[in-house]
Picture 1 (cartoon, one colour):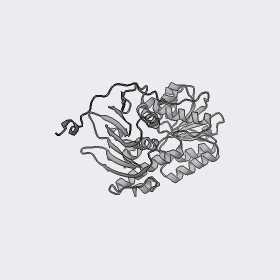
Picture 2 (cartoon, helix red, strand yellow):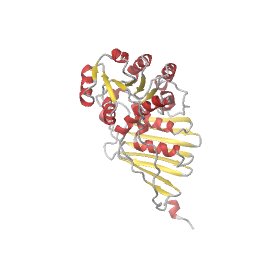
Picture 3 (cartoon, helix red, strand yellow):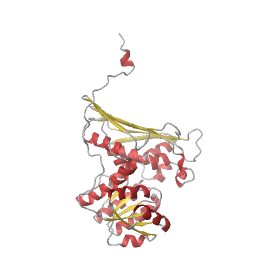
Picture 4 (cartoon, one colour):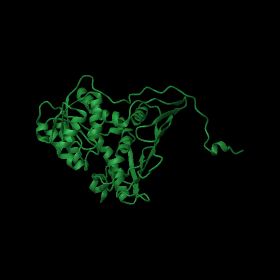
Length: 370
């Protein structure tokens, strides 16, 4: 006799169980409290500075090519800090130990190099570099000078993504065979901004967070296939639709990005493994409900914080912890090159009509677009 419930994928409601207590919160150093300089006072700098101010970090200088923007950020977040348009003098200051560098990649590379040459630990905005060879060169320079170089992949400490990652690392789902991400939101805010001139905006500037998330799960990716498209009726120049599939040993990760959803935004992540399943679901990046389901039942942790607070504090906090503990940060730049290799492979695959690309085969954004 046919079991119609099986055909309908019907399942019994699991029992409610206690959620594991996992280290998803932003790390903070035990005693190390260096003076920090922020270079670049554009729009994203506000998220950096708000998180640092809430945590009581010591931002001593805010430097920007536009002095007025440095003053505005200083007055809003760190009134006692110096606001300046003199980056060279900022990097020469002996009391500054850590530099947070936020401009776009092409402008950022020489600033990172100058900061490392000046003996400063560096937090680089994401995406880290446009070329993997340039990234390795910066990492080698940091290593040669005994400095820490990290990347502001702030999604790593978004509460829901951090909890999912730590649950996988702790073995709560066993061997992972599937990762599914589906995000639908309105990205039309880019109209009239420099972002609308980036042809691969969704796969490059936005999706880098989820490529980095997949990389953080240590799944050993073997190939990437991707596509992108313009949404019907979209008014901005950059294509707002993209998808990517990442093959890894024993499984697949699928990423869907719809930046043209004006109504009913949705953000969902699912990780399935041999002994459990993790899900995170909500209307946006910061409002998420996480569930862990296994043979014992269903656990629903109550998570603290939001992406645009804990996420930005996490990247700097982890860098400071790594400096204090004399170790490589989890968001270290050298490891981030694996995340960028996935990004470049996806862009190259989309440019090649969806042909699979091996991560690391394409080594720069320019090569990916060719």
